[in-house]
Image: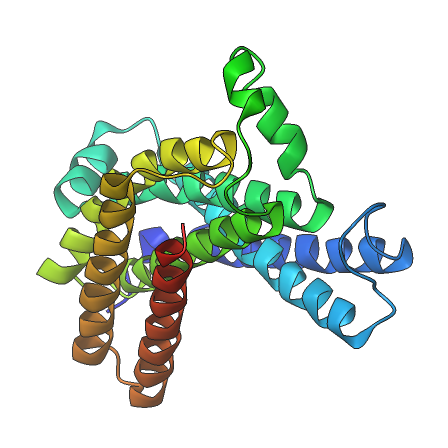
Length: 255
């Protein structure tokens, strides 16, 4: 059974998100990538990276647009909507999706346009001592961690919206929704610290991120196998998340 209230604004959000991704691809391809970018659009590798980033832009745009668009198509002034969503955990998902969509777009742009050094200078502008410390790892490594981490959160959030759209209510989904809501706020702070401290991260922060990556992945894949009819889709999602989480853990290991 599909909850019609969550189908409101879904189609237009998909269309706008895909359109943004296509426009991004065309503009950057014509300009041969953003000036001073790390990659060359003329190479096959550069073209594939542009394509992947364009898909990422569409996903991040959807995470940002759909929660707002869906709410606008409903009687958003009614308290009943928020009471229902608080009990279901959907309100937390809305806030998380908007925040993640914005951060995901920001990390993609920074990675693609090589803006990390500029952000680093802004973050430590008031702390001269931090400007003197040597980088622990290079900027590309930090960029890759930020994008891969947001990709994990983005995948989980998209799956949560799928379950909401299909009116699936499970304990696993509530755990994932509130877990995601909790860790996203922490991640915003941890990622800024990672940039400002030039690749340094507290062990407790590292453990927390890796722990929640595994928790979210296990619970969301469990929900996929239990509730989705398409076994192949569930297997693909499980394998993709497993490798993403493993890759991410390896990246953190060298910090």
